[in-house]
Length: 99
Image (cartoon, rainbow, N blue to C red):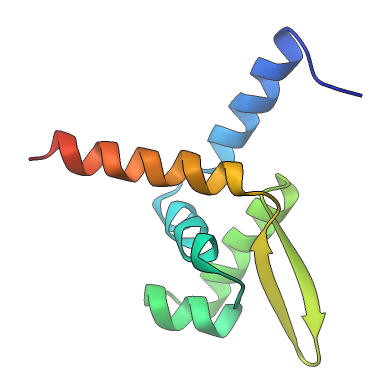
């Protein structure tokens, strides 16, 4: 079933709300490069592990990321590349408007 009309706008709004926190944008940017475990994101972002895990839960709940158990760790990746493009374009736009 595809989302049409106003439902598509509601879904887009939910996606943008899920991306509204700067750390979630940073997580999506990192996952756009490739699959990462929580400890990789903690190291790269310099954020505490509980905070990264909390934001991954939000992104997972919004259908932006998925996690696959690999032994004792969970490897996170983007559900699809559309979100990576949206975030990359938004970050590029923000950098351009500051110059």
